[in-house]
Image 1 (spheres, rainbow, N blue to C red):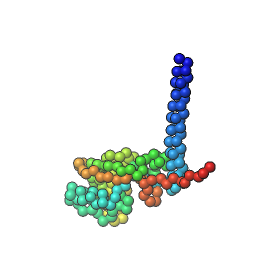
Image 2: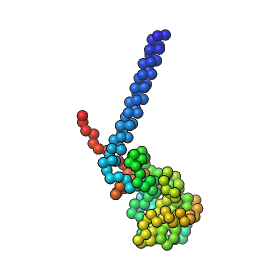
Image 3: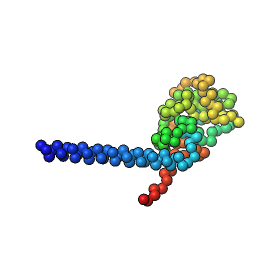
Length: 182
């Protein structure tokens, strides 16, 4: 019986060491991501970014749904804002580079802006949305106020984007610094 108890203790110790090693490795990788981001410009916002073809299809749906043509100014980097000025640690934990599917559940439009309300990805915005277009001189951020004034509910299409962040340019991954030999 004594040898069985010792075997169980050894097995338990090995399991503990293995789990501790795994957690240590995960922590080390996370710490490298955060360190790499700290050396870059701070994120202005994190979001789900959409391709021009996805936006074209969304604008066609919008025109068919509302009868409205897009306004003249199209956003440069169309996206759903997930968080504005997020902490580096928060962005490092996001599934950067992964696809996200969002469903259009409403829209708002006036002479200054057009936007769709979406669901399907966490956001700190009161009205998670994608700006479709604005009038000349009107910033895309106007559409958050537009949506706050009222939304027409719809059963709209599903759109697909990529999770990323903006720090002066759109990025979908964190560049890790090269490993240094010890």
